[in-house]
Length: 75
Image (tube, rainbow, N blue to C red):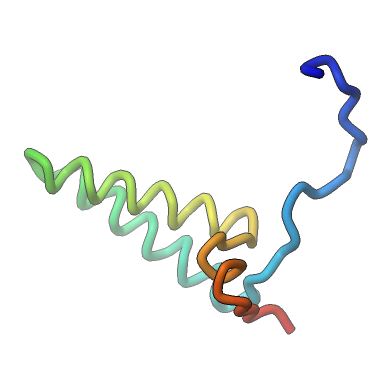
């Protein structure tokens, strides 16, 4: 059902990134995002997407690839 009540404070995914990993992802994400904005063509779109993904995973602390591979940098 679409109208299910969402519990406040419930995390959808388990955090599997450590603090250093998250900081690196956010910094690289910002660099890629800015590079994508300054670029042209298909490269621009690719850099923007990679930047947004990096920032998103850094903020949330969840990496889907880590989950699939059973990796966790969280200590």
